[in-house]
Image (tube, rainbow, N blue to C red; front, side):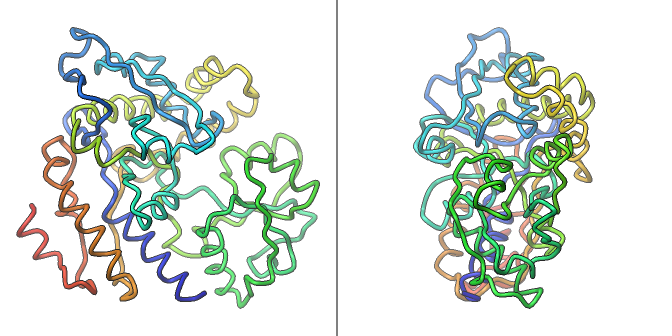
Length: 373
């Protein structure tokens, strides 16, 4: 189990390092490109060209993680880039499947899902961090008395069936001298947290900006264990915007236009949280207005946080586990193939930001920079 955890975390860090693209933050430095069809209009033509219809699929029901997308629609930022964007909810296969199969060009996902997809050969690429720091963690009603990962022992966890869940749980429990095998796991799927904890689970993995804020409004106090508080390595990007490798290679101008407008949407939400909340409520009137407003006020400062621009994804890596040799070579090959088109499309160079002093496959910062910069 320990080896599996080390491998998973190494891959997680590697994906944050290599398979992410710094997102656009200004008109001068808009990130790079994607594909959704051969009839893409040049974004520079803006309103002078027919609008291109595209879809972006959410990871879950609409919430404040998605406000920037709705703001970009409402404020006309997409139209200014020649795009008519429809925001849709995921089908039974989920957002990752829809993007990976080119059913839609863009989606909302999680870095842990991208990591798992990459190891399985699925061509997902993270192109922007929606939130700069990880606001997710394990939450439990206070009457379960879960104050630390040690308290997970003997409790029932409600998850969604991803191997990343157990890997992260094992990591933070081992740091407390606890045994992950003493946790009972139940797949709760999309079940509501507040309903589930009243039935058969004790704790679950949530985003505080939505479920945590809802707990406050309900007057149902929870104990929240943010995963990033137990390891810097767990302060990864989640959620993220994703696309397909093919889209990047075949239609970089589409990605550039989409990210430029999306960045403006999130910047609007950062600067105008109350107005942005109203936009989300208007677009999705079934949402709880009080929850949306409270969540938006809590989350808006966290979209960009300490990054120089919204969407930025930094590359930071530790020496890599030698058990990852095959996966490393595969991922580096992806980076090599994508590098030229990403830079041409306006994204900061991936290779120039890689800080690997050593890797088990013999690649190094110097050799990569020389050949692909």
